[in-house]
Image (cartoon, rainbow, N blue to C red; front, side):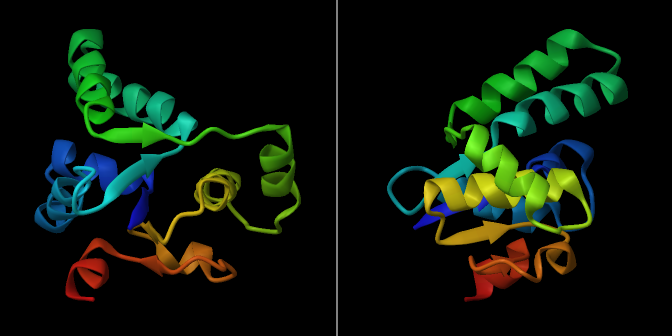
Length: 134
């Protein structure tokens, strides 16, 4: 399956948030054998910014991104994908960009911590726990 992972899932392990074990279990399935893991281009900058702010270290943030890129593929998107996000009607533009990227890659599922923001999605939207139990 093509799994598209929202930034919040990518950050669960780093920040040791509740649910980190489930997010890490989803990530471990993104090995190209069981499933393939996909992320949006802007998840890289968002992740770098948040990890650097928390750790106060560009080196740690760079290692976080390097680790992501060791298993995740980055969705190629275009101007039309960005325009779709602008016109989608989703309340949160960042979520609209995530959904647009998931659609661009033909994801089988979008894995996120905030499923409520994606109610209009034509792609199944699941929490890590929901995905693992399906």
